[in-house]
Length: 152
Image (cartoon, one colour):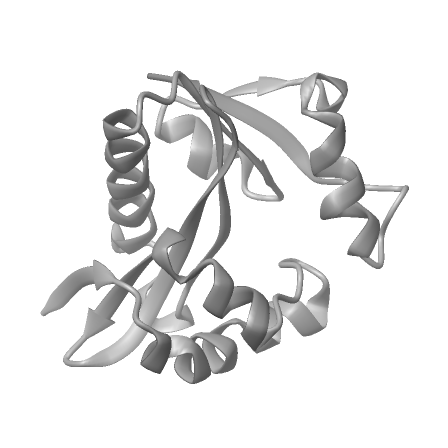
């Protein structure tokens, strides 16, 4: 059975362990334990029988703009709706804050398009996103990620 909840500080070690393979491959940016702790309220977690199975974060960039980032689902549960459920929960949360648009940078274009995100040019993203996060990526400035946006 899959259950969903907001993250706590005690979840950080399990979150770091789950995301490590994707960080090592350069698919997801590394977030230090301190950075995760600072932003702990942004994370939505999925558990299968009390074992962390996935998570994602909602990061705010402006009063009407947020980002879905750090989305990860364990290999054993990919394709079973866990990621979709996490994203939908984050979109619902964004709506409660009055956010009008939510973007993502991803290699999983089709996944986000199934959730009604549409592709946009990366140049349309806020400049501070590029300098705050993308510059930390080992692929910067030659990035293959795709920018997509969802309108609430």
